[in-house]
Image (cartoon, rainbow over all chains, first blue to last red; front, side):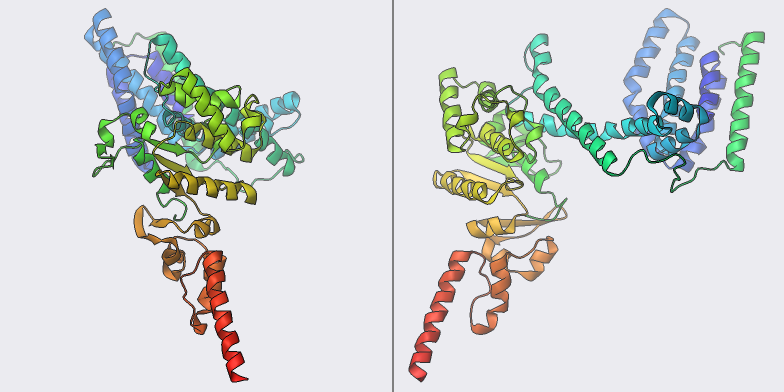
Length: 231
Length: 247
């Protein structure tokens, strides 16, 4: 919710002071979550794109606008990476499982209340596994003399065939194995499954939710009633 | 050899330049690996990876084995001949036109081996080659390794299969936590209790037996069955002579 609470105003306004403020608010949170180093890494990966945004906007508009848009990009990136770095997919799955609407939709659509949230968790978890597989496949094919960055554009695209086919097959095989493993353990079980970790709303969560909601409402109100300058 | 995560595969990847040293130097036949491309080094150093599913992609076994030869720029005629020879040697000739994905796990593993052997690298690196192979195939693989060895090629094997190593009695490099902790002949290393435990291995059966026969004046560093048989026969005839003398 805090994520949306930060993103909505940052998309509505291009005021530099506001954007810097929202960025600074997150710094202590990043420190508390002990993810500053990984945050810096993801920022480093975004340097090129933010430079591009800055240059493009610099030539098409005033300087302040370019600065504001670059800041907005950095802010969005920080917010999203903050969310995904501090929230494990398991927790997210559990949280989704609590949402009545998703359970209802899942039951209607797939027949089981937990199916949708489980699908989501699996998808998120598969990304790092696939990345490791991809690296191994690339290593194996390079050991067989495959040179990925050789030849013209068409040749380069074709160079990726020996990488994509094994990767796809591994993914398909893994999903079949996953399905078998699930069935062997009686998935999805009966209605009313209990979970080892129970997520509960604490006072802090309610407070954060309240602040975020208020922020969003305020943002919309200001957006429709006033014109906020860039600087 | 060494425990999981000891750095065996990392070391293997250094040898054909997939990984470059962040400290120090790795040389292959005097050439620094940082100055050569992976393709150039692979021509000399062939690595067979653990899981065949990571490299199989062709429609037929024949094409799969010929893939690397095409990359290395072999003549088409030479390629066909080399592929045939390799498939013959690994007992895969009757699968030449089959899709590699229709083969069993052990057969796929042999196709992966064939795909590397086909260009006859000077150094062959095998990552866990005995996993999923039945006894006969292991025997075949062992003979194959010995044959390559006698042709003057170096074979480096990453493995946990102590019995397989014991029967070959090669030079063993033992790794633990990213460092080489010991190196020497297999019979010295694999009969050393301290080292075995450090690398989280289990002693080969013969070494277990002979560590308990030490009281009878037998050596403790025996790992292969042939040497064990010879030693026991000697001892037996000695005992027989003594019994005959005393009666």
